[in-house]
Amino acid sequence: DVKVTQSSRYLVKRTGEKVFLECVQDMDHENMFWYRQDPGLGLRLIYFSYDVKMKEKGDIPEGYSVSREKKERFSLILESASTNQTSMYLCASSLFDGYTFGSGTRLTVV
Amino acid sequence: DAKTTQPNSMESNEEEPVHLPCNHSTISGTDYIHWYRQLPSQGPEYVIHGLTSNVNNRMASLAIAEDRKSSTLILHRATLRDAAVYYCILRGVSGGSNYKLTFGKGTLLTVNP
Image 1 (cartoon, chains in turn red, brown):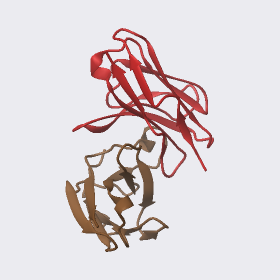
Image 2 (cartoon, one colour):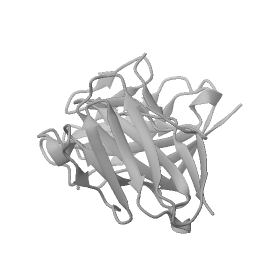
Image 3 (tube, chains in turn yellow, green):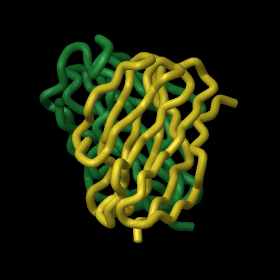
């Protein structure tokens, strides 16, 4: 079965810390995405990548950066974590058809 | 991005068919209609997608209006495990940023035993 794996299910970090969220897919997909999901706001796209070393801003990129050095891995970086970045983070990958999502990382910034 | 409109919530009884509507009056000729669902505490899950013709798979059927301005996701026999938020999304095909999905609020489906 195809998989998107997010490195942590739950994460607690302190304000000001640099945070790395890792996502790995085993489907040789070119496209990868990072979303965050908050109650009442739904899923919002942070960044996406349609090729190695390529990245594009989504709808809410402020406070985030990404890295895609290899096709299978897409990392989301919170340069200096803040409490308003407490959220569920979801990674996804796709080729041409459906997206496959990971199980999510629930990040709490204290 | 072309927008979709879905009811906020719907209710169904177990083992009965469910028809989830979606309006997308500004759809472009190359937009595919995608459906995803999200069960509680899980990431979204791909359900089905189509362009013009009706589509069937093991999970559901997708009925697309002739003018493509609306579509209906059909669950033939709802089970309690089908209780989820269902998202109808339009997706382009020409590559790059057209591959991104923009999620709306979706329809919360409740299935009664």
